[in-house]
Length: 253
Image 1: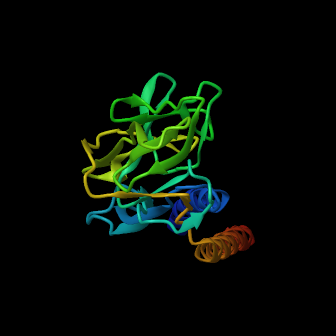
Image 2: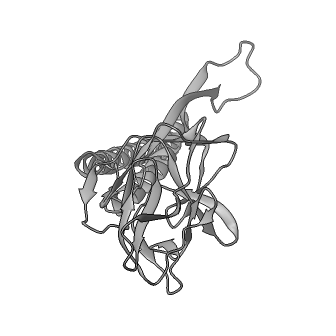
């Protein structure tokens, strides 16, 4: 295969991967607490297509390699909901939730109550406090969440606050190492977990996605144009190769 075709093909493969990443960002532009991903590319040098009977070594050809992705862990905008059970984190912490019998992590603070009074996510996962799941009594009202995560209520006709727990918030030495599990949940992966002492909670708010929709759509158009341009270039190279073969066939022996 000609070197131009090999290089073009390597670039098209990375563009296809980049389009998948961009499409996932766009699809989650309205997902609470979603963190955008971005592609990483690097130059990959390798020997070109060649015969092996030359004296000197061939010059290496520069290919495009999909190195991976990195996560933008920047803060998303806050949106007021006026729901006292909704919470948004200001800082780098994550909520701890119980999902499928294991502890997972999320930035989505859209919470509600289960039929048994337990605080849960919109997907039904229990929200964990520092002492276990947060549980409310049937007579609880006037829920208040302090910036440090302490949850208090007024119970029945009582005039003094009753504590129902403290929201568990954790941070990681490198949030980029967290593994996305789907459903807006993360696993620790190779990151090291530790209790958070700096982040604060805002009651009645949720953190929106940090995806820049306009920027992602612009990148999507750019990727599509690049892919098309390379496809046209490869077609031209193929046509030239075909034309050369046809002309050589007409040369007298």
